[in-house]
Amino acid sequence: MTQAKQMSLGMNILGFGSHSGAWRQGEAGLNAYIDVDYYRNIARICERGCLDAIFLADGPALPPDVASQPGGRLEPTLLLTAVAAATEHIGVIATCSSTYNEPFNLARRIASLDHISGGRAAWNVVTNAGDAAAQNFGLSGAPLHVDRYGRAEEFVEVTLKLWDSWEDDAIIGDRATGRFADPSKVHTVDFKGEHFQVKGPLNLPRSPQGRPVLVQAGSSEGGKALGSRYADAIFTTQTTLPDGLAFYREMKQRAKAWGRDPRHLKIMPGLSTVIGSTEAEAHARFDQLNAWHGEHGLLQQVAGRIGIDARELDPDAPLPWTQIGAVADFERGSHGFLEAQLNLARRENLTIRELSRRILVGHRLAVGTPEQVADTLAEWFLAGAGDGFNIMPDMFPSGAQVFVEEVVPLLQKRGLFRREYQGRTLRDHLGLPKAVNQYTQASSAELSAGLSPSPSVIY
Image (cartoon, rainbow, N blue to C red; front, side, top):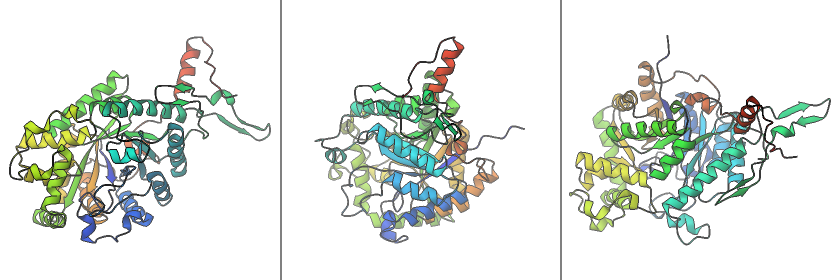
């Protein structure tokens, strides 16, 4: 019998939790967000549940609300190297900006993480909006949306070429003859584009997965174009099932149009969770966190997304649709988060106050029992709105622990999630094949056509 399809599950570690009031609850020490053991503990909890990966968001600027929120984050590739050394199976996904990095250095860092982890690394490609990050890199303000994604596409193209610059069998390792590598299988990149000029090759052999998993986390037009062409997985912000279904179908069709196998592009919507043993307990937990954050803080989250001062909003009225404008005209912020928030408010005719209690960090929110959380995951998965999900608990570590101990077993009983790891690499967990080297593929095509392989060797 053919085994039924199973979902993928990632855990997004957002500081103390996805709720802005989590740090005030006091579940973890005040320095936990810069303590490597805090992250190792969460990763081990997730590994006990056989989750695919942990995921670290990041941005190269201090958030503006440092007066009321813990400020700063450890650098993801360094932190995840330490986490990988303390775990055996779980994948490690680092967010790094294509706007404020250079391809060679970042390609090397992520490939190093893949080697060190034994093939469990991924790069989450982001294009940073916001002027604060830009001003840390000599710019007066953030590049426009279209420019950020133009640079991102080139960045990814160069990175993939660098990751492939050593063929799988380039290392000979013949001690008797003293021949270490075959130079004909180590390729220059010689990339010259609008944004980058990179010679290559990478000064590191090909990594255990062929190349690290590439993740993309944008739902704008630029993000969808980039993700459908290059990504192995897309983290998305859909908040209603109709929108989730539409996004899933669109991305699979786009991948197919690029000549890709749509099964090799995993769509993973985000889900924020607040879980209690009863529905009343879950809502009490949520209310307590909201009380720490305050009514004004909840409204500020909505105001920040739509770009309107909170003082101009009536909490008990619908969104001021005439003032918001088109998502495509929103130049410097996240199109995906804005669209997800607007779609939810429009479909359910929510007031601003109601909307502020339906979304955490821009993603769909589930407040309820383990059974209810398992139900909503199963509903979206079986309907075809996702190949898996990126989970964002309200607080750490308890939110991760209750998900692993209470929700995961329910999914396992339904045959929707694994009971044990079936492989060692992140590609194994996600059900993705080992990446094919583009230079090997090109040489094979040339040989089958009766041509000599194109010269691109380093020496």
